[in-house]
Image (cartoon, rainbow, N blue to C red; front, side, top):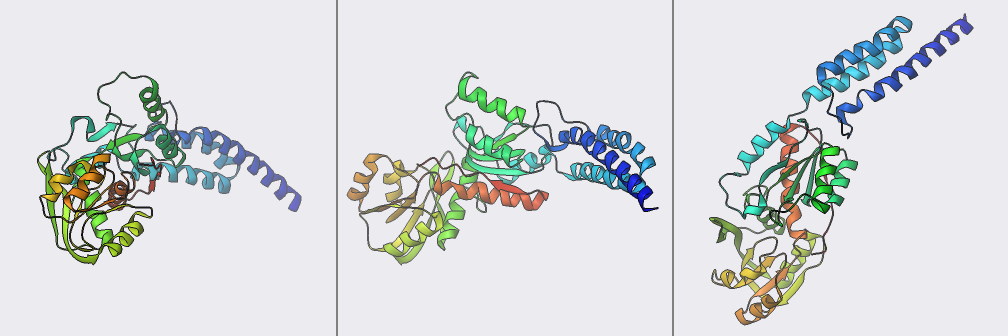
Length: 330
């Protein structure tokens, strides 16, 4: 009796291995990165039936188990949000059509994928290295602050061709958002950095492209305390130009590269200005204006927005998210 059971189990196991081999080729279209178009869900269901029906006759237990796994994958695919739904919501949430920006920002969806989103990725910039990291994490919607077209109109060759080809081959959609993310009151770079610093009494300031692009806050703290908090928030170094008061009263925050706006910032009666980077002459200007200038790095001050946006979308659409960290050194 035992030997016949063992023999029957071996036959079932062999069938199961064969079915696993066949189904591995089919469900790869559900989430694998490939040049081929994804298999429609209806075809996936038919393939499940075709592969597992014979196995059900040979060994019902193993056949049902493997068929269940396949159908579960198809079910998860059906439950995943569509790219169109996420893009429509994000455009409205960030007011893409209302917030002014430089033309080359090209805010919104820059590359579409096959239509489904199973994992969101967040990064400050898009690059071949970032796209590669996204593919390794099975990301099929990548959200960035700096998109593909900052250099302006250019032929599709070299780096741009490589990036486009990689995105197409790995079915990665690209969504880029610049000033609408900087200025957003909840998930914006400025708002999240100000919150990380624990600043209160916040007001918008520094108009650019039709809207305020910075935040200023009343404060009563020492310069050394602010520097300590900024280093902790950025988890990195801060370049300090101590030309303002030791006891701070008004702080201005504009993430990224706003150091060239120092004179305009000074007109707002701000004694301490926090930004990412600045041109050489800004150090001289800070001294002449009697201001503290704190530079936290362009990259480091702009990780906040993409992370916060990814968290927001992950919670709303019930999909996981990943941060792809590729510091530029600036």
